Image (cartoon, rainbow, N blue to C red; front, side, top):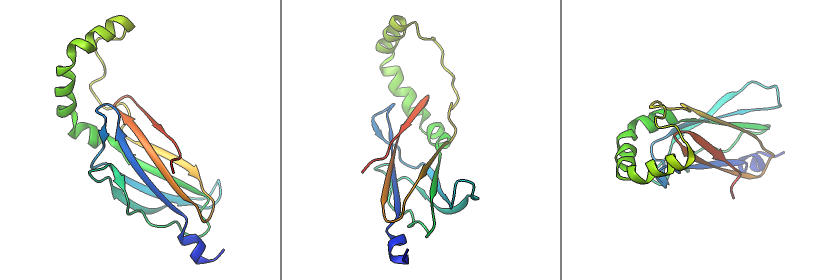
Amino acid sequence: MSSETAARTSVSTHILDTSVGRPAEGVALTLSVRSGSDGAWAAHGASTTDADGRCKDLPALPEGTTHVRLDFAVEEYFVSNQHRVSSQHRADHKATQQAEEQQDAPRVRDSGVFFPEVAITFAVVPGEHYHVPLLLNPFGYSVYRGS
């Protein structure tokens, strides 16, 4: 494989905070790579999401990369945005209370961050671009291969 082909193997990501329906700005992440299923992880890049929740500056993957891991540090994001989310929840308190009564949901939820970090590991092949969106909220997340 030529280094020209390896340079085209790339990763991008973005995060949507589904609890407020907005991009998650300011989330730090690291990109690690390895060759082979049992290879050692090597740090390869780091970034922070921009105002649109995107990381556009992750480096191209080195030749021989077979697996990538994105580690998202989401605890700091949720802690720093807790007052904003709390204000919105107070405004919707009546609707939330009614929904909880209908679903027999617990009245009090954990006040801490349930997922302090999110690690996503995926396989790659040379010459492709991988866009990995993260849909995030304080009590869950979902990820998929985007385009």
